[in-house]
Amino acid sequence: MYNFSDNIQRGIINLAKSNLEFFNEAAPLIKSEFFEYPIHATLFEGVTEFFTKYHKLPNDDFLLEFCKDKKTRSENISEYEDELYLVNNLDTSTSNNPEFVIDCVEKFAKRESMKQAITKSVDLMKDGRFDEIEKEVKDALLVARSQDFGQDYFEDVDARWERLLSVAEGDFLETCLPSLNRGLTGGGLRKKELAMVVGFPGGGKSLYLANQAVTCLSNNLKVVYISLEMCEDRVAQRIDSIATVIPQEMLGGEKGQKMLKQRHKVFKKTFSKAELRIKEFPTGMANINTIRAYLNQLQSYEGFMPDVVIIDYMELLRPLREGMSEYEGQQRIAEELRGMAVEKDILLWTATQTNRAGRSARIITDEHLGDSYGKFRVVDLAISLNQDEEEFDEGMMRVYVMKARNGKARFIVPMTVNYNTLAMEELQNGSQESEIQN
Image (cartoon, rainbow, N blue to C red; front, side, top):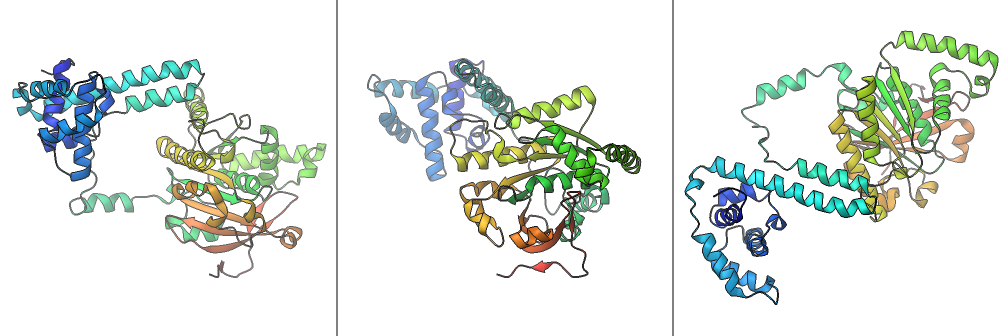
């Protein structure tokens, strides 16, 4: 019966329209286009549509009415009647073993998904859209039944609290700001999370990310800094000043170079496990698969597995699918970044720009993300950098915590910016961080 012939497809339709338990397991795996015979595809589509609308399985009369609307001019309804007769009179004795049947369905779904991916890839290859080919094949390989039924709230109490209480202090990754860390559960962020700094063009986003990189190194973490705008040497030069407190203007001189080497040794000795890789990709050319491939190469050839990845910045990434609107593209990129954070078990930091109104705003909030608001939904932490002309002259800045999924939000942390060493620090004046006024 289930030999990937016409009969396996008839068997799937037979059970799908008559066995609710089977349908619930099979429906997430199967698409109507998987069926090689168009009539089978239409019948399965009818079962799915009826269940979606009425939450029960259809009878044959409904299926035939559905087919009348879907059939082509060259088809006769009698063909559907004859096929439905064969479906109904199929030997279903093997369906007494539901695990065997659903295993066959899973194999069928895997095979048909891969066939579709290969077929689509031929056209994509002609257009040179190799990133989309990778996604099609990867999605096909992921087709499988889910065997994870989640957590039993009442039964898993001991195991759940053992996991929660066993979290080590070092599992929380600090930001640059002590007040923000105190506001987050556990004192920081966790791996598999996405954090974002928001600001207008030239508002200090890249500078904050460089400071964040040094904070991570000071916590003995392995960091990858990916620049999509600035060359690797310039990024490293910024980090040189922040990490060693040597002013930028001194770094190029003989005295500055000698001090840099000495302080590098001290820094590396103090934070012996800290490692940093800085990688530049051409502006607007890299996408999430480019970065994923780079991280895979780092692991394969150097055994380097980062704790933190910093991407400067997300508007300069390309979405995997071409032709998307700005809103769709930015939301999709944010989703891809968070997915990679989970996949690679890393904390991922990135930056994003405001709309035009954000430049003149006293405090940048989610309202100033404009058409790219979709990216805000998926982040775990979002902070904005706020600075007027007077504050710029005085080396001051306000950080507004826009969103904190695991902690306190909607407050301001005052910060100083040393434009000689490029170091950003929370203002230490003995006062508590200021609450934003609604």
